[in-house]
Image (cartoon, rainbow, N blue to C red; front, side, top):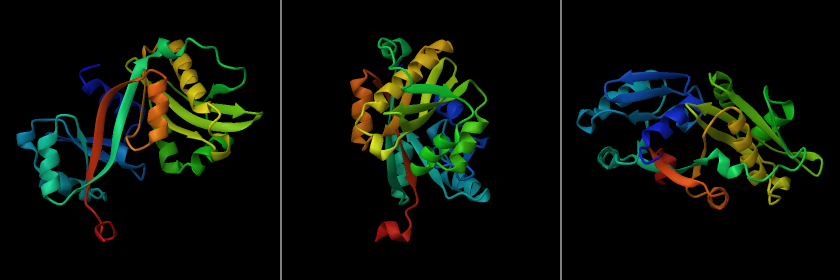
Length: 244
């Protein structure tokens, strides 16, 4: 997957903004409180047409602070935003692999199972990880094939995740393991379960992303043989507290 454009389409298709607005070379997103990924503007046209003032005005017009997602090869706009005083936040690494790569080991019985709509306990697990109603609304508005994953360990709830498919690629979102159930291998089993579910739905690729500083998650995905297929980060206007 040398061309990174498809993986960003997967992100938008499996974790969609409340509204996408095409404005010149920009794609603007209305997030409705769902976090940076569904609220950031992206430059999807020629960089020489990138009117930052215009994008800022548009975002403020629908009640959001200016926020930009910077992808590979966009050093020019990244530097322009930095010169305006924008700070850097949340560098992210994107992983992907063929689903077959994670379907070679059978799942232990009743360790992970797919279910949609989410159970109350899944919502509780997500809430403990900071995934509240606004992000659950993102899951609800996904149009394509999707599921939740519920894991168990020692006959107790272990974790929850969300998986959706866009154009043959499944992407895992909101993977949360309860603190007392960590270090038991549940994250590994949940990723394998996601791949098996994706294969049953006809998907060819499994993908996931995490912040580059999340050493545990990055080590997990690398250990599963997943390949790095993209990076991005955000540029935001620092608050007074950030500057102190």
